[in-house]
Length: 268
Ligand SMILES: [Mg+2]
Image 1 (tube, helix red, strand yellow):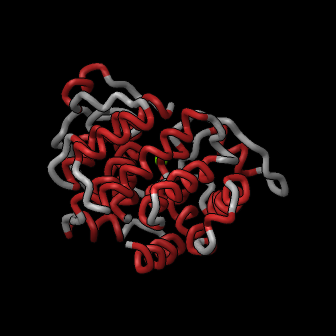
Image 2: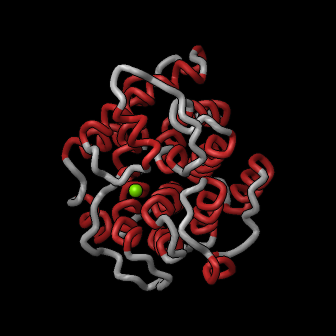
């Protein structure tokens, strides 16, 4: 699960210093961003509410996630959130429903692919994770696609099976390579433009590091794309270089690390 967080940390430098070079220096003056903070918020919500999931409706479970988004935003309000999310998260004593089609619902969903053991649970939780901040079909589909890719990868499914499932279920075109789109790829935060290429960055990889390099070197929303590709890649390859682990681990705030470790001990 930490593969998502490490992807965010590695990509953070390149969100502002865009690169198309696959061989970019991996470990720069990198830092965790909103992707890590919100992934941790999802972990916290799951740790506190993981019993009896079938009896809960999407809205009720969505509220539990949303409470944690606001809480963790208040701990780290300058971690690079989108404008719309920041406005929502900063409002106290209300829980409005936002309909953003940005990739924020998909960027934090990796823990859901780890915590739940049935497809229907993963799909429901991924939808609930979007309820208060990304309540539109585009963002929900993106979150469900990423959560299901993680879920299938960690359960030993092949890349072909993952590609086929996501293509059929979510009508995503994943039939291309990173090299095919790199020449014209731009910076997108919209789900439909950034989530499918992040999944392709994983499908087109041969290990954790190459998935993250693929994602970052598209030159787009590097931290979020590397977070998604890295999260799926770790679930699939089940291995991350020690050098990457120790560098990235040293960049995570202790408040977050405590929750992430607790989650990993329980589910990973
Ligand atoms: Mg970010």
